[in-house]
Image 1 (cartoon, rainbow over the protein chains, first blue to last red):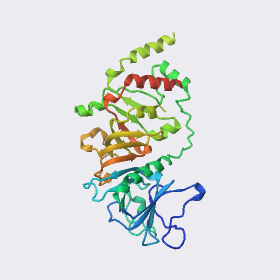
Image 2: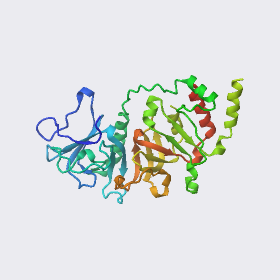
Image 3: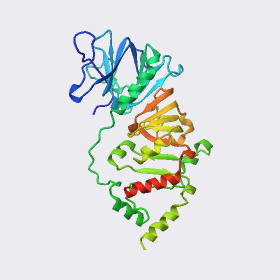
Image 4: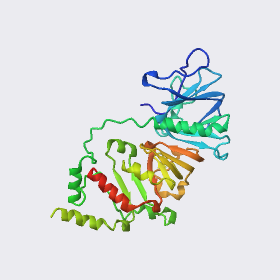
Length: 249
Length: 106
């Protein structure tokens, strides 16, 4: 899968019409919002244009130039938000962050791609959509949410056999030996690094729940969860050990 | 589904969501779905200087030019690295039991 923003020019008919959708993959149009300007990164707004939201992606097409348009898959949208704070941006807008495949800024500039019009859209990480009617923002936000939820991360085939949810035997072994080294599920109490107290600030004394590779973990059930919690909250840890031990007697 | 149920119980509380791109957003948890997509209300970007333990590598390449102060924010579950929870929102007893149950496969 290719992440990031792309140029988009496939339109129905000859005029500045609607975008051609990927009917084979059951892409359907969810919403059309005329009168929307688009801002890519820190560039100046482009307008006027029309926003098309489908079940798969967000497309913005210029009303003036048929060959001008952009699209981004919902899979590439890390977050979207309603921005009404004039300090954040002068016009109320939908703000979106785009996940890209581009290597972090280290790449030498000056791509020699031919479709590159001084702007390498695949590296754009921020997009703002400014409807001429700010009252549409909440509706647009809700549609974005709805469509984002239609596009969960594709399940990657993993051959890893280390699937703790279903390997209860393995888990019991791990518990019996006082916490198997290979158990991906572990609750660690690490007094050397109590995250909640690193600053001494009260508001920082909070529990931190880490779920590394959260999403893939959920799907593949191979998530490693690490809870770092104040020691005192694990008073029943001993009890648990006793239970385990007595269970083996 | 432990996480999902757990996060649902935290709706209405203040959380800080740290993304894999090192951005941290604080807000009131509005909802969470089965993919752990997270919706926040009254959200804002956290001043990272106050959270030195969260800065993996705060290099210049990560200048998002972002001063995000927004009402509603939707964060894709797959880009979340951490969720910081309010201590009072963590019922360790409950969580303990739940994780054990889950480990037993029930």
